[in-house]
Length: 116
Image 1 (tube, rainbow, N blue to C red):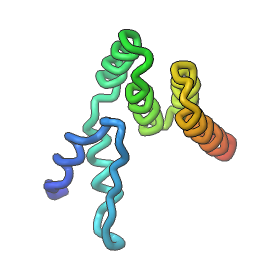
Image 2 (spheres, rainbow, N blue to C red):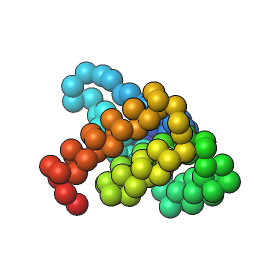
Image 3 (cartoon, rainbow, N blue to C red):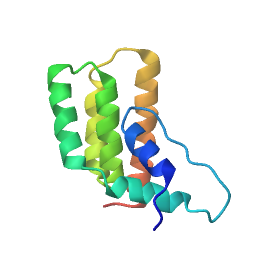
């Protein structure tokens, strides 16, 4: 596989609490690019760091978002659901609570269709 410029750019920006959208024509390697980026990630180290950050500052919701994203990338939907529910305990903002509830509902639907 050829090294791609975008691979290093995406690797540096992944898990920052923002979505990364890869667009392009059909059959140009978008999925392959993302799979390559994700297989190079050290998820256990990242999870350890985010858990430490959550313990120190449980009200910083971005850390929960990153934990959820890592668990989803690992196809560990049960742990992703647990992290969403934990995050919900640390906010009273109605907009954020609705967004969390929507994500819980969507993840629950996925889990029913594809139980792991």
